Amino acid sequence: MSRCLTDRSIDHVVLERGEVANSWRTERWDSLRLLTPNWQSRLPGHGYEGDRPDGFRTMPETIDFIERYADVISAPVRTHTRVTSVVATDDGYRVATDQGDWQCRTVVIASGACAVPSIPAVAEAVPSSVATLTPLDYKSPDQLEPGGVLVVGASASGTQIADEIHRSGRPVTLTLGEHVRVPRVYRGKDIKWWMDVAGVLDEFYTEVDNLVRVRNVPSLQLAGSDDRRTVDLNSLTDIGVKLLGRFAGMNDGKAQFSGSLRNLCEMADLKMNRLLDRIDEWLSENPLDEEVGPPHRFEPTRVDASPPLGMDLTSGEIRTIVWATGFRPDHSWLDVPVFDRKGLIRHDGGVVEAAGMYLMGIPFLRRRKSSLIDGAGDDARDLCAHLASHLAGESPGPALDGRASAAG
Ligand SMILES: Cc1cc2nc3c(=O)[nH]c(=O)nc-3n(C[C@H](O)[C@H](O)[C@H](O)COP(=O)(O)OP(=O)(O)OC[C@H]3O[C@@H](n4cnc5c(N)ncnc54)[C@H](O)[C@@H]3O)c2cc1C
Image (cartoon, rainbow, N blue to C red; front, top):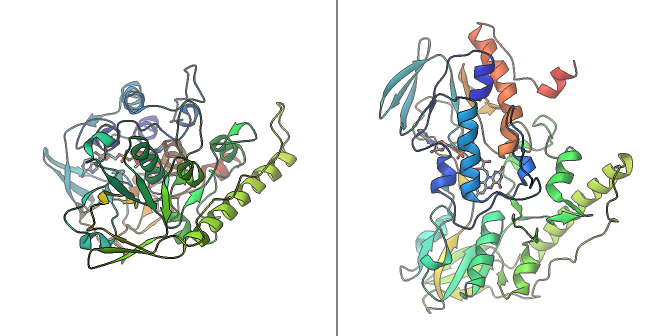
């Protein structure tokens, strides 16, 4: 957004409570790599120029990449400046920070979709003898006690953390709900490449049937590694991880799991095959110059016919629980009445229901890719055009889809 504002000569400042790339510096585990290939972190005016376009950035590489971008575009960042409140005024907003106040006509909220972990209420009933942590404070298996680990949630974070912890010699049990299974590689190409060329990631928020639903879809079960291996439930059970249904409740120190494991896995397999069908269909209509592998399908997820429905958390078998149950934003500093009943900001494709206020970086904000680094550019261009009209005193309607306006 800063780059787009600069392109339009709109005077602005970027307020950051930590350093540039703060979330990648402070809230990620040590071994994490981006699950998006290097070529797929395109930012306005900035593509990948290295010699590993299909590689996956480590955290130091990711921090370096974002830091360099801020430098190249001369983003006017004020680091170590925490926003503590935003209130509406007659001609815009007053933004209070721990480094003084700002008066501005517009505000872009880009404080992250994954600011705080979403932990189910049942966590409160877990016995105190079991250590608990979330992906935001997990760094490496070394910080865990020896002994069994229960990982809750099988999306990108949960599966990657379960894989790493189990390989460290601590037996992992994975309890899971709805998840999105995809192979890392299909027909010889990265799944993200297929999703990009086939237009899946560009799907616009006005084109989907159930926006609330797609905004709540969990992250893909995917990991980035040099050998491009797939990390999914089958690869986890291959190394000995045990699978259980959804963590449904606690009673007197005993965890209860729903019997839905098989259904959940069948649903994920079905949806994966639908995506692969869509890719095959796209390819038959858009033949590539290069050769790709033949269409094929993957082994269905293997699950026990009747997995255990309970587990005594006081027995000492489980020493640690990792709540990999998703994240939510933290907009507690925003003192403008724009929240819905669930505490989420009401917006139309990032145009917030308060004149001159915009939102970015939220799942499916405007496109399926909105919460990816690669999605920020298109969203920023659209929203910046709206913001410029607002500053010009026009009354812009919803922000246009850049693709539509580019096509005339
Ligand atoms: C575990 C994990 C893995 C991911 N892997 C990938 C991946 O492989 N590829 C990919 O494209 N995306 C990935 N993502 C999504 C990724 O977070 C986003 O792509 C990207 O970070 C979004 O950038 P952002 O600037 O919107 O949010 P963030 O990176 O979260 O940045 C928000 C910034 O706002 C600052 N901030 C928050 N509150 C305040 C305040 N009150 N005052 C001042 N500053 C504040 C924070 O310090 C932070 O620096 C991953 C996310 C997680 C959680």
